Length: 243
Image (cartoon, rainbow, N blue to C red; front, side, top):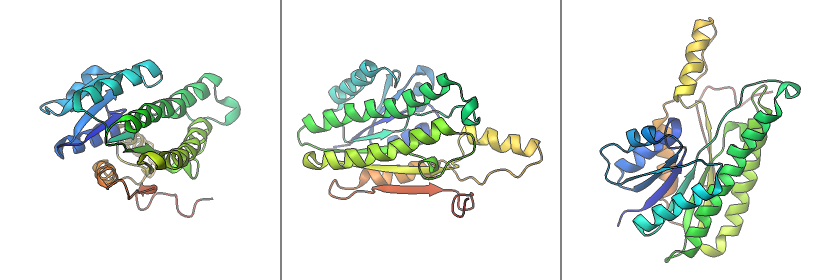
């Protein structure tokens, strides 16, 4: 019997690449994001894909998506809690309050809401249990310049990961976090091209498919084993030795 994973933010970037990897591996995959056409493009030619359109900031839409996926597949074995955004960079006194609130709403509250829905389903199902994988960031450890909203929310995700790990033990619910640095998504490709146009050295990057492989590895472990924290990054990016 194939296993089931819900992937939030599955319409592009890391979410889409990871969804394709799980589909190829034969998992039943719930694809959750706002853009239906983009989700359908990821799901194309995969009978084991479940397009679940919704907004991560709307708890009822998130809960309904989990209910629909569980009804279709019988259970949910894993969540890749991936949806997030990066607000425009600025010193803290120039960060609009709305940017702060939006980052907290998506990157923290949205991930809490998805984890809450997954935890409830995993606790109720028979056999009990499952795995939640939170997408942190290198910014969960050290910040980039001008990124107070993003950095604060990603530090908070580390605390959420630890709390879910602790609270999930009685129910065979494992929780881990993957912290990713400079995977070559469309956004990072734009950053690279802009640097080249300006005559600057482009950032060190690596292929996003390696993230998908790592998440699959984490999700495929038996529930008595867990990758608590994984850092996956471009080898030469300025993380080790910063400051």
